[in-house]
Length: 420
Image (cartoon, rainbow, N blue to C red; front, top):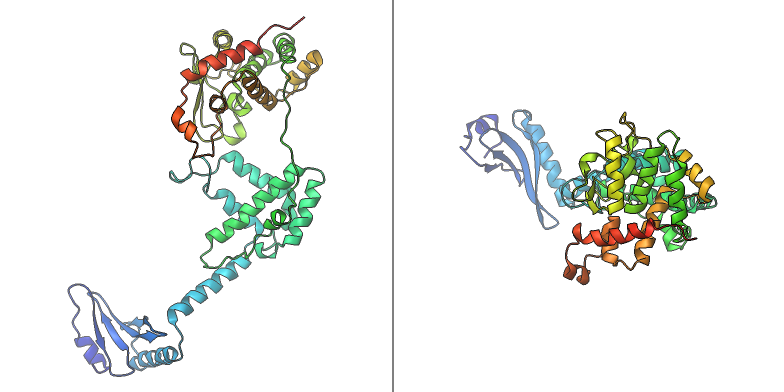
């Protein structure tokens, strides 16, 4: 068809789909007609691949000579082997890399902290955001150790910088050094994961150098716990030395509860900063002798059994406490400040332990009593990362009723009388 306004206007719109009409020159210059529009296009092969370029709508491109000139320019580019699709992809990549080069560390860390989980419990079953405490820890740790890097572009952070900063932190706090670098590595990996480019924005994560050169700080897990012969002395101090203190009765019962269940501190007292409520009476069933911890660290509810003595302690507490919180006073006030309680206990018993030391004590006692590893894992609400454990498959789910006998044995051992 000749390139004229009259000829183009005479082309009818199809009722559906699209049709193509070609002009005489240059070869490949044409008109795409749809039910609602007429558009100039250029269609040809470049490097053996068929490509189509949109020049513009007829109602916008009213200058027909300019439309043909653009088609001629495209034909020349095709003849010189310039692929418009490849050029578009290269431009997109260049723009993305330019944007990434301007991305600062503070932006990268915020993006990583706000992003959904990529592993762990719950991953793969819908969008699972990180817990509030995890997000807070990411910002706290990275601000503390990389505060002077926050305005740097992520592409400016080098392996040498990482090595020097890690060594500086590790000189005083090896565990913090490793944690800070894990957060930094994850944030930089997230930059690559979220980019629109086919090649990584950050060619090599600078934190990987620590592993490659075996320079991660040598850290040992904390081992604080009560020795088996010290447990009765500590229990006696808890039961006798806290009376008279503000929240003394609540702290007394809560510490015994943590010792006899292996519960985490936040599962008992909650964490207002992270939005976790304290343990509620609605999650304690004194008839069934069970307690349920909600939305625990591994993102699941955890029900466990209670021993007979602990059930009696809770029954007495229910008479005196508030209607909502297990370890609240009569005004529903829950205090998680255990410093005075721990100081008083140390003065009386000689032992300074933390709430997590009591959890380690619980695990150590269970192991001493030859409670199976599978039941201990269930008691501590630990999730196994081994999905190919055939034995676990044979055993099947360990129920709360399966925990009653081991929990009673643990309680009997913990609450035994002081040997004289």
